Image (cartoon, rainbow, N blue to C red; front, side, top):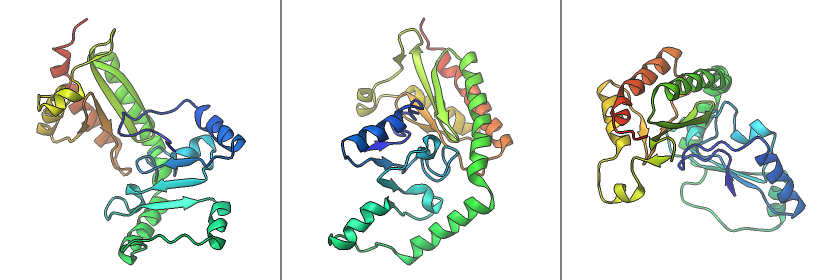
Length: 237
């Protein structure tokens, strides 16, 4: 079981050989490949699902969030036809109260239609490329940026106290003890400029709506550019 593009741990995009090789290994050993596309699915990476970048077909795919545009909670588990056929003849008693609720499924249909009619998947790829270029420009400008990584409209900007050692400004223990985090300081400064960013312990997850415009990308990057001066002042060589 893998996340096609790891989200919470910092938007880790695997090398292009990774998923195809993993698929080969699971087939060789008759093991199911289960991909978690809760965060990376529904156009977030510039393809319908992140595994599509590498032409990989998992046995089981789990997803949520973007399936309804995140307007209504809904999750989905999809399987290969071979696996589905097994349960046609081998009864598996499982279900829950809100399974296949008409309200949530209607939102899913509406969201998928919007993705298709507005060409949002391809758009995420195009605008995402521009976003990546703008964020990479910031790395050359700010010594507090240790890494910029991502794909489509799914990016992370990692900040460090020292580039040479990759020492972070804060740790998970700091968070548990309620100490102020540098990421929170930067995020707070951005909020004053009208831009929200998702801050973690030592990185920001930048995953804007697929309908974001180039002008809105510029506004967000400019706010981050300005706020990162707070981190730059505490960088050590």
